[in-house]
Image 1 (cartoon, rainbow, N blue to C red):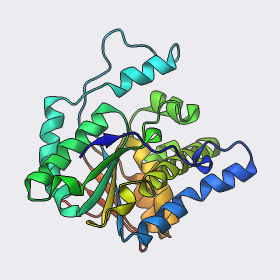
Image 2 (image 1 turned 180 degrees about the horizontal axis):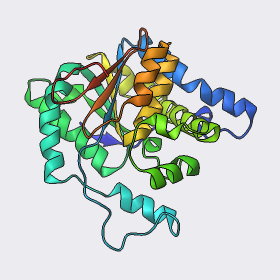
Image 3 (image 1 turned 45 degrees about the vertical axis):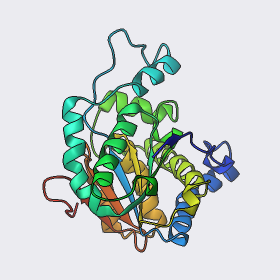
Length: 263
């Protein structure tokens, strides 16, 4: 299925500049859940990309040249191990009855999406059933200095470890809502809005930033406290996924070893 540019998000998906904007952005996750349910989707799935190469030698630094750094980061491709991970993870992904795939524009995310989609297509699902669309904000570079700086200094880990200050907690929440707005724009856009086969919408993205998006969706779906705790504590591995039931916000952790498992 062809990759097409993301539909620009509505103003509500932009970083909040005042109280009105903040209120609008906070509604993105709820609107996404409602819109997904209205078109017959029952689940949202968030998948971390497979193993990828490090930044190229001589790449720009984020501090000195953030735009160049973003480009270099987006061009990182999968390793041989990453492609093997895609093939293995397609076993649980194939069981998800995916209607459409959204992805960060980073190559390592789109390659993972296409690698796992290819496995679905070889299992008898027609290629034209699945749509692949880009959500620009799903690549976190340039979206939130607070979130980027925290990840740069702390590295990988569960979302809870990034919630130790109110400012950081708010920044990751805001980021999650922005991406929800981008997902909503794609869901309501041409092509995807007409699709009916499949009950799950998947987004491929990056590490703890996926947890931040998933947390907002879970809250928007009315998740119980225990389910929220799962998202906060889940350290998402490569090609692992977070499934959210839109009916009640319940969470399932998907991975190769014994998928599905409870987080």
